[in-house]
Image (cartoon, rainbow, N blue to C red; front, side, top):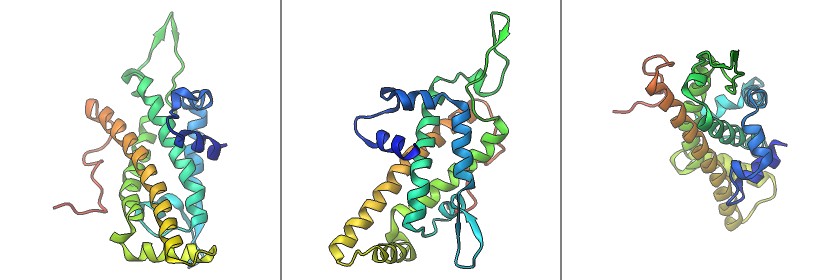
Length: 211
């Protein structure tokens, strides 16, 4: 179903509010939690035989097989799009877990995550953005481009023209994912700016040394 929803979102001018299924899922806290759990638990087998989370592979900007990228990109794109849309309608009081009384009764929250969980989640999103830059622009990291070429050769791509087209298509998928994740990161950072829930220097990654 995630792949179908992912296809819907990518079809211009399809956006979440225009598709009833997507709109409903965006405000389904249980679905969003389950989707993030699936993304977090997805793993791949490394050359050493160890199983490593795909989120970790992305964060490192490490080369990824076409099979693995096809598994995680639709889920990650869908999650980032839906959660971003839901945050537009969530008031700060609800976001930060403040009690909201409605006619003497506490209103159920649309927030799928606690603040503590959001700290971990936003850290993963931050690192994923940095890693995707390397995956989306393989010319900055030769081993990524070499991995792309090896992967496409394994599925029968032989000519230089076909190879270039396949690499550009894969780049486009990562760039599209980068855009929706960065939008979600901006929205979470905006909440943190208004009322801190993340530790100091949370939004600065140790992976990159900016001088």
